[in-house]
Amino acid sequence: MVCVIALTPPQAKSMFRAIFRVDVIASGARQMSSFCAKCGTSMDTSDQFCRTCGTAVVAPHAQSAAPAQPVGPATTSTKAIISLILGILFFLFPLPIVAVIFGHLALSEIRKSGGRLTGQGMATAGLILGYTGAASIPIILIVAAIAIPNLLRARMAANESSAVASVRIITTAQITHQVAHPEAGYACALSDISDTEIGDTILLTGQKNGYRFEIRNCAPDNEDGPNTKYRVVAYPLAGNESGVRAFCTDESAVIKQDAGGSPKKCMEDGAVLQ
Image 1 (cartoon, rainbow, N blue to C red):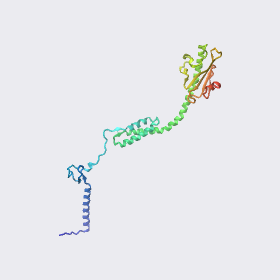
Image 2: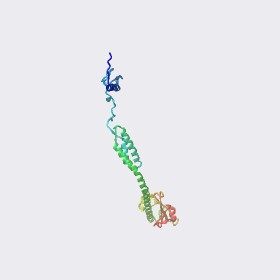
Image 3: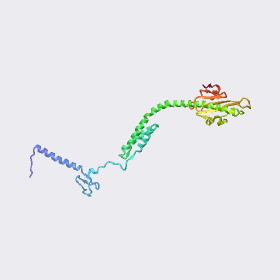
């Protein structure tokens, strides 16, 4: 006997919704089923043990991988230390540029380390110092372009003043030597002058403060007589670097100069030093 129940449209619609909901829940339950990690048997979410091998079921949330944790104590990034040291020496080019490179590498390395590396503060400090040094390079170059030529000119002026003073010392030593050795007269070489006569052992080597000193054209009035003539010349070891002018004198003790630095021209037609 078949019993037929007549349903009104609202009742039929409500029943359809109830049946569809049961199907969806059942389908979702099947999708939430898992597999045994040991034997691979399919299990429902309500199962606590595998129906085949009896292995305990691990909840899905427990199976998810835990976030990576740092192993052991954190260490300081070597690149961060290098960046900081080079940043402190930012005034030595090109160290500031290298400090910036290592600073960026250190920060990238620290971010990717997952907590295993520290030193972000040192890397940041190295970056700041490095960028500061790199920004100051143009200023340093401008100052150097102005200061270096002035320093070179000042050094050459000091060397020339020292050369004039040394020529006077040699002239005085020649007079002393002539008095001490009347039979020989003036010395024909710096090595012939004694320490007591000149009082400057450095000058006896023939070089001092960027200038070379020589005694030339030593000669007597008579063939067998004492030396009554000589020339002293002083010229720069490196033209336009250690000095510019050449200086010379003779037995008259009048000091002359040549603006081109030639000792020969100085002796021939040098201008009297004022």
